[in-house]
Structures are given as C-alpha cells and as structure tokens.
Length: 159
Image (cartoon, rainbow, N blue to C red):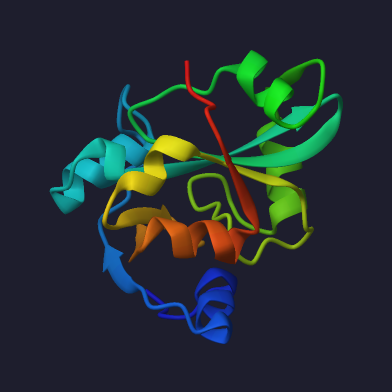
C-alpha cells in the first residue's frame, strides 16, 4: 500500500504529524460501515475513528467528518452551514468531486475544495483516525490538527 496519497501529501506539506495505520478493507462487510470496520480491525474505540461523508446543503457539496459510531443529523448539518436542507451525495458525485473512491474518501487533499464540517465532540479525543485517501488506510492524528488541515469548522452534527 502506498505511503503517499493526496491526503498524506497535504498533511506533510502543512507539517502535521500523523501515523499511518493499514488494515484489510472488506467491501463485503455487512452492517456497520467502513469506519466501524476500521475501528474493529485497528482495535480502537469507534468514536475515535472518524468517517468522511460527502453531502449537499441546499444543493452545494460539503464534506462532513463525524465519529464512525454516529449518524449525521441532516437538520443540524444544514443549520450549521446556514442552509435549509441537507442530504447525502450520490457516490458517483462524491468520487468525482473528491478524486477519491468511496470507502477511501479523505477530508484532506480533495480535488475540489468544499466546506468541511467536523463533529465538535470529536475534538476532545487525544488522537483520532481519519481516512487517508485509500481503502484500508487510516491516519492517526490530533483532532485539532485534522480540523486545521481540512479547513473544517466544528459543529454539533450528530443525531
């Protein structure tokens, strides 16, 4: 697995310290989702593994970063970004906008710059794990550094 992705390049350019963790990505895993799969494979608490989701607020693309064991409240997301409604983005659109494949979308180094919102509760962890831009690649870093690198604003986003 390459040690360099657009996500890792951005973090290195910004001088942000991170550790690379890999695991065997299982696209057939039932239930839980990618973040929960990563948490289990890496042996860390699910609230420390942040999932990166692409959504739309009033039709405009946004990136949402929340703990893998939580669900995004679309009402809270829309309100946090000054919109009226929010919905999840279609996978093909998410891949086109980010330059990443679903299952490997990172909030760092996306092809198109979009607003990024991060769950404020996630910032209280010592470190978090964020997708590194490839399936089976997680980057462990300080959550405040993650927010800075992504250009994220913290909000209460989960249901």
